[in-house]
Image (cartoon, rainbow, N blue to C red; front, side, top):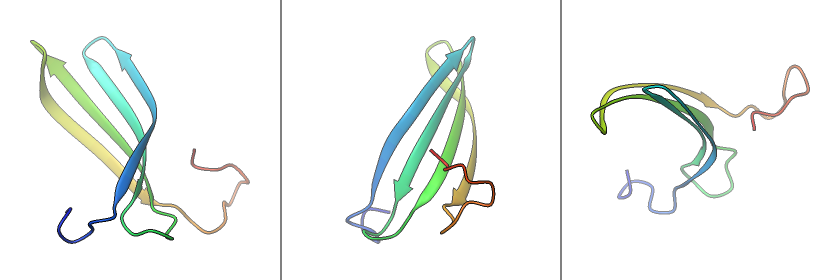
Length: 71
């Protein structure tokens, strides 16, 4: 990814942990000047190691349908 998008960056907006689950809410931008994507990463942790991972990725639209932002 860093080779294809050397100026990409991600900003963690929220971290939530409960029991054996950890969730990250991330704003990821591959190319400067673009709106980027909203990312949710969910990890299940066992014995201090990540044993499962799920994610959801959605491009940030130019305009929100309901007036709420993604962050």
